[in-house]
Length: 325
Ligand code: AMP
Image (cartoon, rainbow, N blue to C red; front, side, top):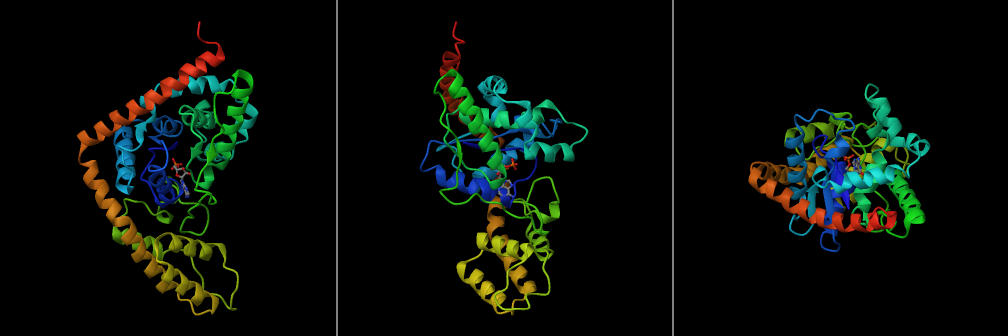
């Protein structure tokens, strides 16, 4: 089970942190993937463009290879049981631990004029989404590690008080470390809302991709053989490993190690490889977005599958809590 907020265009971080695993998992597991529109209301209360944004996230997931016939691909607000479970879990979440959450602290810095209770209880809603399907594996990027730990705490508290209902959810990346796709400016991660010039979006036009990659921070190159890479150079290699062939990465590794690397050439190559990776996805997204009837049917089919699983869980939850009079 996993979700993505409809707060903007999806980017390379969403792809390599989350969607890549959704696509792998759809053949191995019983999967629930959703567009987290309720979560987006914590920071984006204006709903004027919400429908379009929800459709875009759906289309972007499908264009990347997610098959709505194999998984439950749905929209969070269409499964009302989420809100009921969120309410019960809120009684098991302590304000102290919520206030200490890193993402909460980040968000109050970004949105000082709208520090609402939904922002504080964001990890509770996320836990509700996951355990609503009694999910064990949650494919997410590294930024979500703390939220998953909180979800396990809520689960343990629930199970301790009301009986063994939920498995402990874990962040999942096929036994590999969780991914953090760095931004192109050498600091932080790619994100939908911060520094757009340092993030590669799945909707970026070819020239924009090339321009962004060429602007990535570099320096005059290493002075000694086999020296350690500064973080911003490490990041360029990391991006190259995601989209370029092994031979190309090895060539630039060797050039770096014997101090002959030319960052201009490296970025040109990376730009072309990024274009080759992103442009087929972008083109597919546009085709899917033009078919509103299809997207509506995907959402209906997904919501139906998710509701079925949610109803079964909530029956067990209400009984375990003694709310079955
Ligand atoms: P969000 O865009 O915050 O709704 O996140 C959706 C999914 O993308 C979550 O699983 C995140 O962990 C993942 N994600 C977002 N940004 C990155 C990034 N820069 N690197 C890796 N994963 C990311």
